[in-house]
Amino acid sequence: MALPTISVVVPSYNQARWLDEALRSILEQDVDVELIVMDGGSTDGSVDIIRRYEDRIAYWHSQPDAGQTMAIREGFRRATGEVLGWLNSDDVLCRGALRAVAEAFHRDPSIRWLYGDGITIDEDSRELIHRPNVQIDPDDLYNLHLYLPQECTYFRADLYRQAGEVDPALRYAMDYDLWLRLAALAPPRHLTAWVGKFRVVEGQKSADIGAYVAEEEQVKSRHAHAFRVYGPGERVARMLAVRGSRLARRIQVDGPARALQHALRVARGGQVSPGSEPRTAVGILAVGGIGVVGIATLIGRMLRRR
Image (cartoon, rainbow, N blue to C red; front, side, top):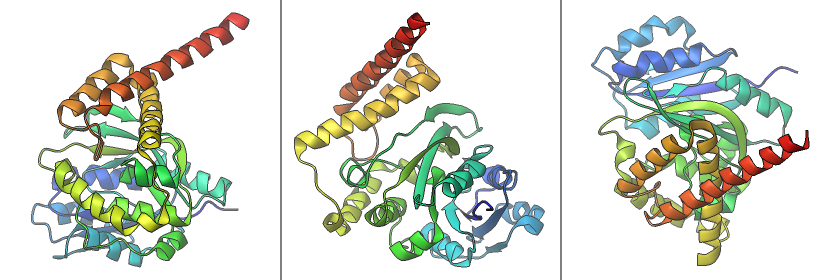
């Protein structure tokens, strides 16, 4: 049985500096991919970059549109793949990402959507920190302000259409809104594989945490009926467990010093992640540290038994 086909939509506007790298990261995957590029009428040379690859692009246009979310929606309407995802034009796919995604869907037909592990890069594509994920359930997604990396998330086309399209009325939390609608129909599955690289760019939309959180709360109010609401104690316990486990994995990959430096940097910036108060940083660091100590102890015991 063949691997499922994957369609990737790339919304873009005046991102010529990074667009070539984004497109190559998709086209150089070792599986067939349907690439759809929705450019919003760029004037910075982006069209010349797109034309370099147009014989390998299923569809593209460059014309004024109603914004990123509308571009994604229109791109998905043109997609014919069994699995869908989108990649912003300043982000990058990891080598072998789409094969790992396709094989996961092929191996287990019960998987309706999944999210992998990510890497944060800077404007010059240097890796800053790894962002490994852990398995969560739909209620966690609703209650804990968990950010599933959009560049690492893929879903079956039939589930997307059942859940409804991305909402062009949303500017910041359109992905979170979609994740909640998908989660109300099927639980997400964590894929232990490096899938996407998120680029940190000065002045980018996602840096406006206040606007994101405000829109996120608006989105949550839409979906309150579909999820169980955690009590304060359960919420704190689950937050520490999930975020601590994530941090433990990050420490394993990047080492304690680098992980601590990153955690303190984002905490000084005001939040551990959208919707998470700075005071939780200490608890998360503690749980992550305990997790790493536990893993190290277990490995030590296994070695001593040999």
